[in-house]
Length: 323
Image (tube, rainbow, N blue to C red; front, side, top):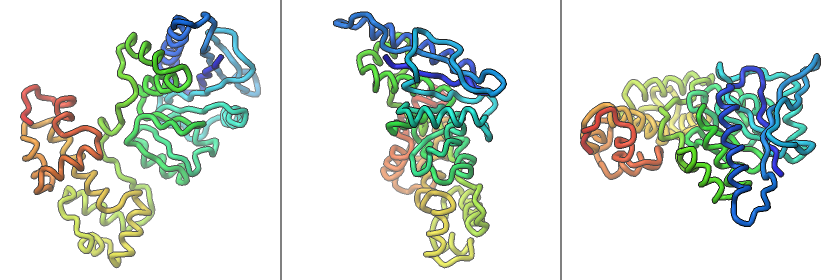
């Protein structure tokens, strides 16, 4: 039987703790009701909190009798945002569970607690897109991908936004209990099965926490011109660097090539126009800097994961906006 431990560290969002508990308990009930199952427990949920003078972690709730150590440990979002210095007992407990073979998972700002273990080095992880710059500065050895809502990297799982606990839990259920149970739970709770991405919702928050002043000048110029003046020679001149040196330092400082950067800047502007205006998609393409609407559509879909028209239908503020 799997034990999923939810850590109620200082500041953990209780709504997420209780919501995950309900979803996972429902998964256990659905699994036990499947044809051919003997009705024995498949999954139990436990809550862990710091107890006693030493603030060591201990179970304070369990939905069913538990084994000696959890199989999966989840860090919910923090109510007030990222926790910069988690309690040493929490970090130690997470490392010990990982050494025991447990899967460690985080949601939104919970990634900052999990990252304090040092386990993110050279791993691809996610957190809420608005925390990307802060996360890069705090964990420079991690590969951050805030386009995705859930990254399942085997022994480490990370999820993006505050409400991404639904996506994480369904991914866990699918992986450890099965597709049929996952779909049963998703249908019962009226939530989408795994598949949506954080890129549907996010804006573009480029890395500005670096210390390269020359590259900052080029970034400022790109934003001032809304990504419409993108020649490398012009950008390098703004930075006061030779072209090759500029390209190398730009990628190192921002995590993007210049092309990726201005494409994301243009797409972010296009999202706003698609949501808030009735401009046709081709006109939006022109206004953000594309002379070829087909190229715009391809870039938009690659970055966002939706076509411009699908994005508009899903997020437009106006019901009669034209494609």
